[in-house]
Image 1: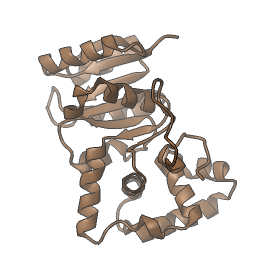
Image 2 (image 1 turned 30 degrees about the vertical axis):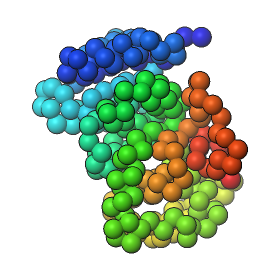
Image 3 (image 1 turned 180 degrees about the horizontal axis):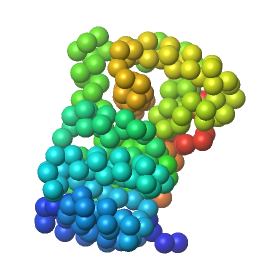
Length: 253
């Protein structure tokens, strides 16, 4: 079985070389291309047709948010392409910007955690499988900010609201959630509005409300990833709460 085809985009030479070495050493990953700017990344993806793009959040030509720009472009032009953004910033605002168009096949991993090659492998396989991955430190920062304002009341959600929120964390739209939970789209809308109200995110734009709700779900449920466990990762131990792993298309319990 071939590994996931990965294109790397990183402008810092040493980091780029280190990432290439990590990918090359992983049996479940295959290096399909290496580049160092947004224009070069867009061109490389067209030629290499990868499964996953691993990109720095900042690189030429402007050194601002090229990684997030790339994720938005690929959402329109290659909806099945997974994108894992690497950053040194634990600010949740960057993760919100990445996920505002949807959480499926998107991940945000802090560079300081690349010292463990397993982190990159896990994140890459998670997003390639259709799930999402958010670095635990980002969620901790977000949860701490929420706590300073009275906390995130995920515990007051009803059982059905927890199911709907788990589906949202898996990147599903309202129609897909309705099909998965065997309820009407109108019922889904009512549950989502109730979730937003209970989480205190009623004043934000729609896409941002969904991302905020997903962050609340992740901060309350443990591991900051959704989707099936990637190859080589052991199944959850006894006592592990099933909702912490959410496979796209599976009904949360």
